[in-house]
Image 1 (cartoon, rainbow, N blue to C red):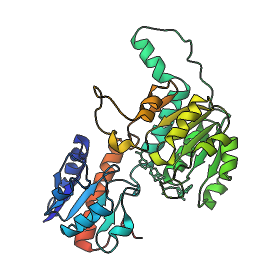
Image 2: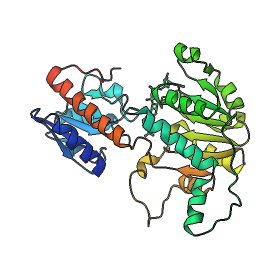
Image 3: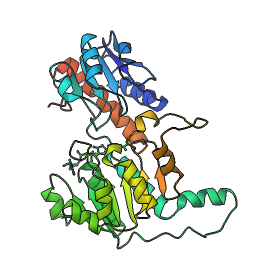
Image 4: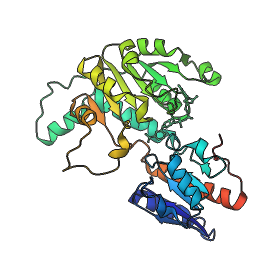
Length: 333
Ligand code: NAI
């Protein structure tokens, strides 16, 4: 029997994972679903389990890792691609870590485009108006994407799909990546420096991981370098953007619009219902109050295809570690 404690469970997670388990009926693998997130206060719930299964807003820091190790837990199975919430150094030699490197780049890239089109064609405002039988067009003027320049930071799996879609719209593409891809360049994508990207882009989209280097890649200084009216898209990780600097840029009318699927302090709010509560994050509240800011709640991954791929890969990862002692999706330092 392999027992995994599943944290931050939502109904759609349980449904997808139970379905994936049906394909591995005699594996002896069992998930126990906790609604709570994993953190220092809840880590004791992992007692008696072989592994924990966590998502983007679970806290897997040094304290949690130390305790998991003491409890005899052997595996951290991330059911996501990013792993910035795990202290990998602390886990080395104590707990193995697996992740789902790719489950649907289309889900995230298409959501990014959905946010972009909604924002620049004011669909969010039109939807509310027509629901109230207000058919006025005043204030809904948008702009064509055709002929505009999009700057893409991070040209991995998601960034490339996003670029393909943007090219379909007839946009020019400027790309920046820490490790530019020669094959992508051969396809006609132009890699530039970050400063050139900031100066030349009408729309900027972030598709790189959160690392020490990329932390606040969008801050006061970089916003200063952008075109007036730039549209910023972040469907990667909240801390890529300094939210206070973004708010200042919007107030100064320098940033034309922002679409955020992630937010630096999202762990306190995202995935939960706070309607009827007083939200005490003034930056988030002010951003949401802006007519040119769209916020979704880390939703970009949420498609049937992605959920099913996440569950299938995670189940396989766990079995690979415990049955074969070898997993291609294991993170090493
Ligand atoms: P990937 O690993 O395929 O691509 C990431 C790219 O970023 C690589 O080409 C890499 O060279 C580049 N990169 C690394 N450090 C960089 C830096 N400092 N500056 C510029 N580029 C850098 O990853 P993938 O699958 O495309 O995912 C990208 C990000 O999207 C993930 O790290 C994750 O944070 C986010 N994500 C968000 C989801 C959501 O639901 N909102 C779902 C899945 C991923």
